[in-house]
Amino acid sequence: MKMFEKVLRNRNWSAEEQQVLDQVQRMVDAVIAPNAAYIDRTSEFPWKNVEAINELGLNTIFVPEKYGGMQMSYRLYLEVVTIISEACASTGIIYATNFHGMKPLIDFGNDEQRARLLPRIAAGGLGALAITEPTAGSDATGMKTRFTPDGDDIIVNGSKIFISNGDVADLYLLFGKWSEIADRRAAISVLILEKGSPGFSVISKEHKMGHNGSSTCALAFDNVRVPRANLIGKPGEGLRILLASLNKSRPSIAAHARGIARAAFRDMVSYGNSRVQGGRTVLDFQGNQFTLADLASELLMVERWIDYVAELVDGGDADFGMEASVAKLRASDLAMKMSLECVQFHGGYGYCQDYRAERLMRDAKITQIWEGTNQVHRQLIGRSFKSK
Ligand SMILES: Cc1cc2nc3c(=O)[nH]c(=O)nc-3n(C[C@H](O)[C@H](O)[C@H](O)COP(=O)(O)OP(=O)(O)OC[C@H]3O[C@@H](n4cnc5c(N)ncnc54)[C@H](O)[C@@H]3O)c2cc1C
Image (cartoon, rainbow, N blue to C red; front, side, top):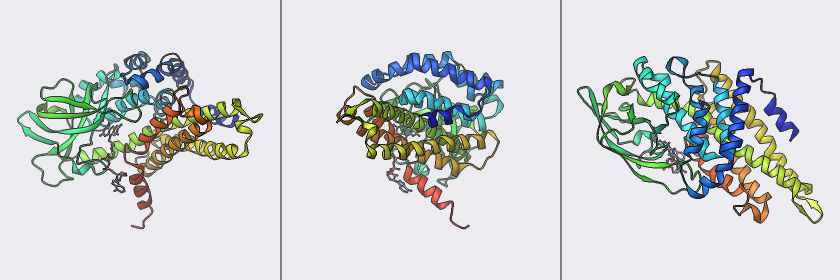
């Protein structure tokens, strides 16, 4: 444990960053961690957790000062996602989705849009990112939602599925196809849809394997009028914005998975040192030591790699797509492997809800699926080594 805590400690946070991290940890210990089993069991949306997050103003750390935020480093944002997710993966993804949905507005919106919309998020509003449709999963170009220009408005028709924060968001970053552009890739465009727009409805909420406190919704758009002023970029710029945005949300998904992996690791160490069988602790058995050694080594590498990707972003490097894919792939595979072994370490107790091991395992699975399945990331990374 000493080696792991040393890696976490020696990360050169500034005094201001350390203060934020300490505050977040205190809030997580007091509010989010004690609520985690309850929201998993009841599938209630954790408004109490969102309020606690907003009391600390955690959305402000990714919103520029000019628009009501107090922007800090991307590396700090990722660590906050990890700390929250370690205690409760559902709450971690609710918070991270604000960033995933609103970062494209920050990076690609115009000044008027940012000034009008971002203060709401900085003040604690919830965001959503709406890409996926029944016909458009791994291949987003298969989306059918249509944006039809009509004077000062855009009329939106279509549907989305699997949208995190879909029933609670204040602002939705919504992708669709511009009706006047025929090409399936070139037509993709993006706009901000505001909560309560007439014609917009939440059709259903998924019943899932895990992340029970985070809502995942199917949405419908029936002649929804959106002011043209909410179009991000120009018609047809959606795919470029989508790909650039995913590069920044994938390390965030990695940070979320890292939280689950940290939780499972700590539980394995703790249980392995306390559970006694045949006069020895579980961690006295060499086979278990080997398992933990492999997983601990991977965790240490993942910790460092996510920081490395964050430093690229904070340093202004624009070409970090593959590094982001590696972070997403390895952190999510590790979260799955670590939580699976965590259940095994706990024996029969691991299969029961007295311990959080089984929740960690259920929560880990989706991290290998969303924001590009891990097959897709393996393909992207592998392809990047092909000679041009
Ligand atoms: C809980 C949850 C929350 C989500 N939140 C959001 C959200 O907030 N916003 C949003 O827009 N979406 C969200 N999603 C959607 C998620 O990103 C998609 O489910 C994911 O991208 C995969 O798409 P799909 O489910 O259609 O699977 P498919 O694309 O149909 O894939 C099916 C299988 O085929 C494989 N496959 C597909 N294409 C390839 C390929 N080219 N090479 C190799 N294998 C391939 C996949 O890896 C997978 O194993 C969420 C999903 C869930 C379950």
